Image (cartoon, rainbow, N blue to C red; front, side, top):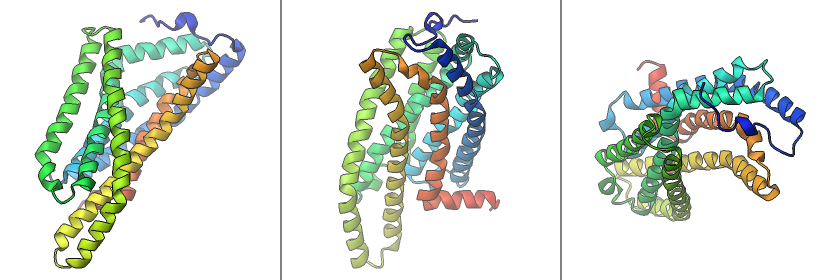
Length: 311
């Protein structure tokens, strides 16, 4: 068994050990929910991907290709990281040895899920970055959007995201990258990407009302150009959906951010208390995304309906 570097500091200093034992024991019961969520996450995202790709890549808008790429990240999360984490915790439901459970989860991560965990993290943040820029272009330069973002370019940028995630994951898994270099690379990707997502989402929201007014005016003045009008409406739907996806993910980051800030203020590692809930929270987020796609996009609804009806 791999040695967990946190074994010597398994409990948070300054907090009752008996309380922490009970807390982490009962927190393991959330693993049953995580198991169900991981199954839903895998099935629902698979339905979205298969439904959209049934008619071929050439029939999809660039934005929907990016949705498929993000859905694949959520699918992989449900099938690997969430499922294995839940399995380890369920096996230890009757085990009150918190350090042993922590060690087994650490071993699972380093042995089985290092590559998929890295792929899911980089895939999610990378795809959301690309989608945020794409939606900005769809709103800011909607007249020239079809020229600026083609299907080929969408496939290329999504492929680059996954190539980067696989490369970094493999380098870490096979010990080519040290832990320090790996964390540095992840942080170097995360902070600029998060900044880009936030900035472009805010700008897109600011431009969205002007975009709606301009489109409504053109549709009123040009009744015959129905195909172009439908395209613009579809891009507007996808922009709203992307904003909801980013917003929901942001809500799931808030508890962890608050725990980290609180730990810094009180000088205690209170963030450890969130460890049992991190995987369930992000699994829940990955399971919500397909519902957002279905609720917010007509093409996704139609694709899923056709798949269910075998049409």
